[in-house]
Length: 294
Length: 311
Image 1 (cartoon, helix red, strand yellow):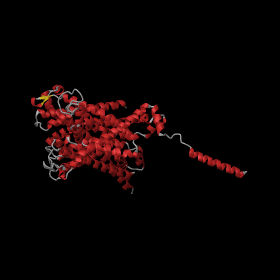
Image 2 (image 1 turned 45 degrees about the horizontal axis):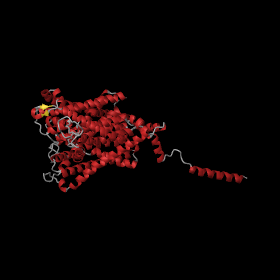
Image 3 (image 1 turned 45 degrees about the vertical axis):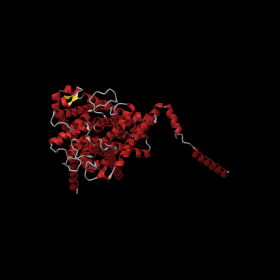
Image 4 (image 1 turned 90 degrees about the horizontal axis):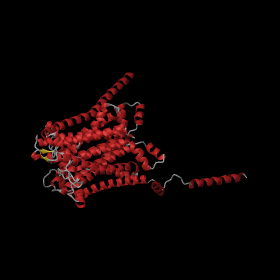
């Protein structure tokens, strides 16, 4: 009887160890995936960087694959403008909506609102792109001038696209804040808004930050919506009504007709590598911010 | 004499009782009171207004995008759009639809276990000061930020060329699985963290092992959060175009795992790019949106059911 119990326990321990090992392997898969992706993207971009020169590639504003000119300065600037525009529109609206959903929304309304934001999250970027092309672009063309395919159009469409990410992640983190924070603030005489913005929001900071990182990642990574509405001109924009070409748009536009194994192909992969470096810098910056805020 | 005092005390009691009924609680706040309180604190009032405006804008955006797509697309939803074979005449989306479902299923089959297991390790086993954990978190955050087009390029270099699979569904599946990993891990992590520690302590106190605690107590409690993560992942797979254009290919037929396959979103992109089939493009968009709504509803339903069962 006792022996059996012991054997059972040992058997259980074996299972525990095996599953723990499995969990560790799953976690390690993330590191492996990142390393492999890094290695392949960077190695494949070396030929172009050698041929053109790193400085020339990054700071020349001439992109003309036919003549062997590969400079992506205009696209770096384009990506930055579009990303900034989308965040300016998406982050405040998403953050405030998350607060509404977590703390103001009456239950019946919440039952309608939550699925709505889920729908927004599910709408494919290509639909947003087509919507932008058919609705936002003509609207801007008719009301503000220009061709319509512009930084402004991209900012609006991408701003809406990141809303659900920001809302759902921020809302979850706000809900995870213990109720006593809110009640304590109220008991000290704070208004509801003060209680939320001054006690709950700081407590949910890491989740809100995460939501912005995810949103930022989505904007920078967005390709299909952008390529349809950004205009794709390789020049420096003078205003938000001018068209730009982003790094992502450059890759997807030219990948379809690029010659296999040519410098052009390598230059496109190098464009992706630059994008990758941007992501690394952003991730690092945010990690530093989070560390210092602790 | 005695009866009189009794009577008196009775009437007194009645009086006090009626008094109780008439008492107005002092902390009852009417709308006017709220308004007055807000007027004293204009900053709070401004914040309230901002919050309400933001919520209204969000609702407006959802309604506008969805309704516009539906109005443009539904008149073009004809039976010929769902013919078995795609031709240049009918622009059928059925092959693309089947490819999308296959791709999403297999990508999730790979990504969900890995993502959830990794999250379990991060939350339940590892101490947050551990160097390995820090590296994994950093890797996940970086992966989450990598643009889908970079995944597409990587898939093309790695699966299509290096493995020699060519443009095929399998290349697309593997690319998408890597792409949604971080999303699933992060949402699962947040969900696991939101489970109160008393659940774990209670389970251990009742003699359950770590594994049993995780699978019987913690995962079910965290299920809604995990499922909402899977929904987001699914939405990304179904709607992904950039990462699939150069991995899964663009042939509008169902050719199995090793065949060049066009998914629904790629189908819509190609239709939109040609500019010849505006109505069909919107109809495809409507199907994409409906698909997502349907999946969302189902997943949420399952999540709620599981939650109830274990509560």
